[in-house]
Amino acid sequence: MSIALPGIGIRLPDVSYRAYRVWQRNRDVYLRLWKAEAIWPLAEPLITLLALGLGLGGLVTRSELPGDQRYIEFIAPGILAVFPMWAAAGECGWGSFFRMENQRTYHAIIATPVSIEDVITGEILWGATRGFISSVYILAVTAAFLLLHSPMVLLALPMAYVSSFMFASVSLSYTSIARSISSLNYFFALFITPQFWLGGVFFPLENLPKELQAAAWFVPATHVADIYRGLVQGHLSLGHLGDLAWIAVVAAIFYYLALISMRRRLIQ
Amino acid sequence: MPEIIRARNLVKRYDGFTAVAGIDFSVRRGECFGFLGPNGAGKTTTVRMISCVSPVTEGELAVDGLDVRREPRRIKSILGVVPQEDNLDPDLSVRQNLAVYARYFDMAKELANQRIDESLALFQLEEKQREPIWALSTGLKRRLTIARGLINQPKILVLDEPTTGLDPQARHLVWQKLRYLKEQGVTMLLCTHYMEEASHLCDRLVIMHQGRILVEGSPAGLVEEHAGQEVAEVHVSGPQREKVLAEMASRPGLTVEEVEDILYIYARTPDGRAQMADLILGAESVAYHQANLEDVFLRLTGRGLIE
Image (tube, rainbow over all chains, first blue to last red; front, side):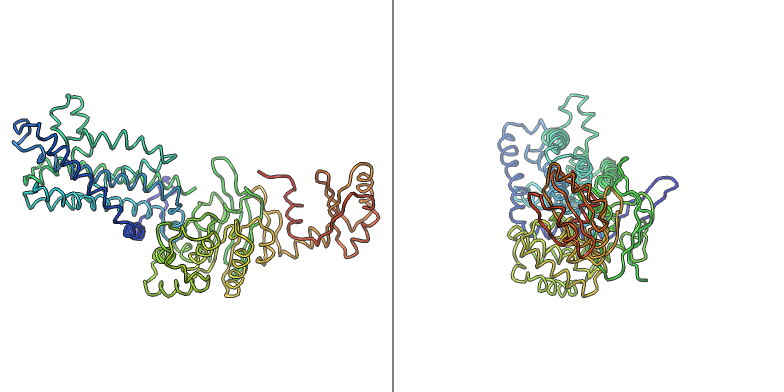
């Protein structure tokens, strides 16, 4: 049952356990296609570790990196942070837009006892799951390169779910206002790609000009990469709690925005 | 309670545009109730409000005694919706489409499997159950969409243009299934601009135009009242046409409507053809047909093209 507070014009989002039904629907489709879906999250980190880690890394001396590590060791935690970002954001960007507009899946679902807020929540939970699956593949690849030394790295799995939930929420918020599938290009070109390259994954942020360093601090991927560095190297500090809090706040804000904005778009 | 849906002064406005302008109707349990009207008449909007996917702007709307504003989930759990568009899950098989949909209603797996088997049998889809959706013809997809709408054994089945785009064989098969469902006591709401379909299936219907209900009644009753017995489509021009129109006033059993170069003469009495015989002697061509719902529809909503 939805609760309306007409007196102050606020309508509380109608989220229920039925969000899980939407998650299950996406899982069932994924399980029919999983072999084709597995190739990206396996191939991308593998190629990156070979090309940048070993290839480019051969040109970087250890002393130029914090902690006197090899370049491939420096980027491994970073790619654990940013490839799942692509997986989660892509799922709730192109994937969700396609389901909503081309397949009319949302329209089919909201004709049942599932509310639009359940659909949105299920979609974001699924986007987070895609990020999580991607993390599992990447952990396997980085483990094969013998780059994981601390058991703490197992915490990367719950962390992957939390950070992917955030990226999925941000992405679905944008999808809710996208007019066409090509307008999603703005989001990926101007928001996701810069985080990928400039979020402190491939070089220490200190190498950037001061202004850009400040800008990078506001970017979610920077905080996610920070946490993964701590987990892979096996030392966490209080600063990482700050990173986590930052991620939680961004996730909460954009999850709420996605709920409001999608209802406005679809329930007319 | 004989009424399963009751609307009082129902209004829907979008950003200043009034799609439904204060309508009243009620649907009885077990009947097939039709919404007819040209595109943009407000019939789909009305049905979307009943289905709780479009908020009511003003007025009252109750479905099975529940207020659409307060109990959308409970109402949706007793509805089966068959949309006009194809929104099946293209990546899933026929059977999986039904199973996934049953889960939205929290149906236990065993019960769902049993219902799916029954539905597949009823709609002759058993052999296709492992096929992907893209391999199905339009007619098969439509049958599957109706089967999907029935998976929760709804009290009310909502059908929006259920046979648009189907070939005659597929259409007749769908009609046969719908008649069977009606015999089983399922209440049906049918949105259509296909008159033959409405005559075939509806017990009662309303004709909507520009957000209002123009008339309400049974298909036969509406034909009787608004189009009479027989219609002559007369191609006539010049002085002959003027003569026909002038004579008309003195013949109470006849009414006429001018459309472009054609006159439609409606006979209200069984001897209509005799009454109009001398009038149309000089016409270029005359065609008679039994008055039908299409005549009612066109008389009430105009023969001009509505965009």
